[in-house]
Length: 235
Image 1: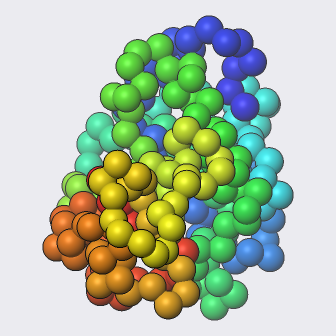
Image 2: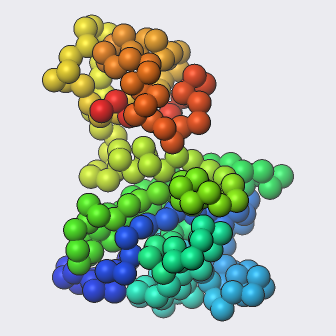
Image 3: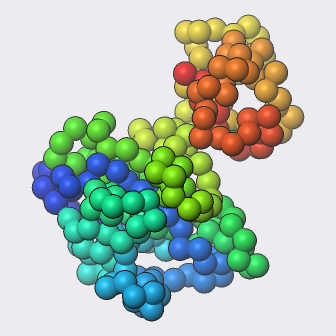
């Protein structure tokens, strides 16, 4: 996964964004770099447009490993619909999967893929030669919203709150006890929605109003329709 060196990697200095994608293939297709390279060439790319690929079994593939991904330190070809310059400044990582058997968008990444994604993002930031806090992690659809490109579901999940939870550790953060009085001191940065949770109950337990939650989570389309497993930012 990237260079085995513990020293800063000068090749990474050109990137100030890490953009996460999916290959938009069903979960029964465990594609590898040769498959994606062939698919991208069929679309008249020079080669695979992603800088890294994560297979269904969690295997990370990049050019340092001899994979047919876009070489680390080179411009990718993965966010051309977001306007000029973005392929040059962003490192593209793609998870194999992202649609169901009927080709509809679906967050179907395996736990191993998500674990590898967290480790790969952290490894990139460990090797980054500048200030790692200056690197922005987002999904393709987040960049599309920012640049007003043609809408896409990719990568089919909200990576911004997910990454804020996983940026330091793979394990989930300590959560608030569902009961008792809210405490500003004990309040963790996130709430993971459990079965039966409502916004009003979360607000009562945490002391964060519904309006505050909506303001803190602009990337979530509709907080009135929360789902089990959804992560809500509280601070």
